[in-house]
Image (tube, rainbow, N blue to C red; front, side, top):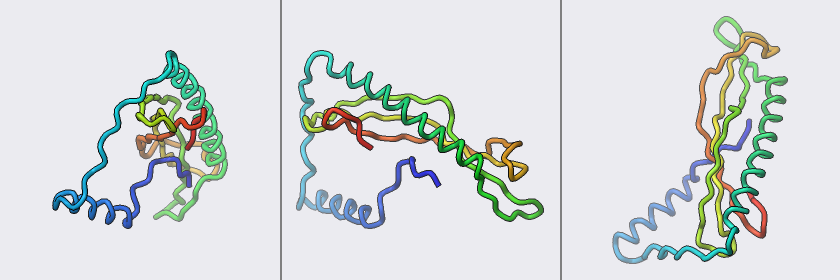
Length: 150
């Protein structure tokens, strides 16, 4: 199973977040103040945007290879009358967005958005398939030490 999609917080983190929210309401704790935007060198954001576009293109090429592998090795489960044959794929289109963080150690985060598709096939060779469902995916990467990090 491909694990590129963002994951929900674990139950433990949800409890910690919930306890922090209660502490803020009771006045025991205070949320961290927002940091002012960092000042960036001229052209730095444009270079970061260009490097993220290249990074995103490579990332999408990588997941297209995963799709090809999954198409050649679909999941086959018993069905009511015929086996259920499925595989995950990804749309060709994607979008990117760059956001400043205000933190000098990781001045930007990049958001990569695309669609994850579940294909349902009529045979085990995954030859005659249709899109059974689609899920929007947003990947978040940080720009740190001059490179994009997952």
